[in-house]
Image 1 (tube, helix red, strand yellow):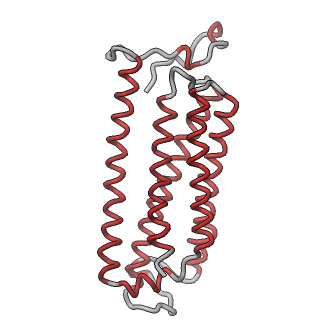
Image 2 (cartoon, rainbow, N blue to C red):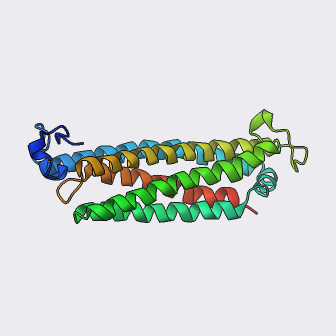
Image 3 (cartoon, helix red, strand yellow):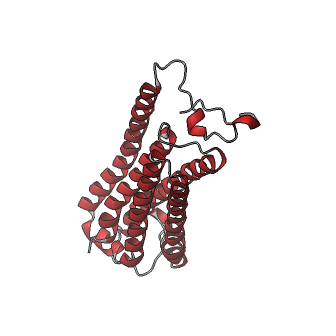
Length: 229
């Protein structure tokens, strides 16, 4: 996404990286490169949507077949922690958008602060998911598929519910970690090279788009999984 030389000689250390950026030779100008990168990333996001569409289709099919099992399984979920995680992701979507805006205005300080808040929210989401949702359920023997052994199961098809729950939420949690990794790389480049500014912030914006997708997917998962009853 960039042809900026991040190994410039000491004479260039005072020049921000976004000012030293030069578009690739096979593009006519920087605007064409930006549009191509955005189009390519939107196509990639479309494949991510297809991935989650399969999980949503599985959810819809099994819920139609076993509505009582889904309602019974949903009662084991804690709406409080699900709601907290929803607020955490909404806050992170705001801060990542503000980080991009700060890059456009060359506000390097708040660009980094907003990225740090976003990354913190990502790891907070993951911590809440593991510590307050997954681990307590595993300790009770509530596991997906044939491993489900909870003696308090209210419906014989509850294992199907837990397979859908763990499948959807674990794939989403993996995307949270991937998004945190992308944003951490953007933060490093911002601190080390001042890589993003008014004339070049392609990588940061694409990472922000990925993070917004992660947020939107959770906005669908939360009511479908936690608010059935």
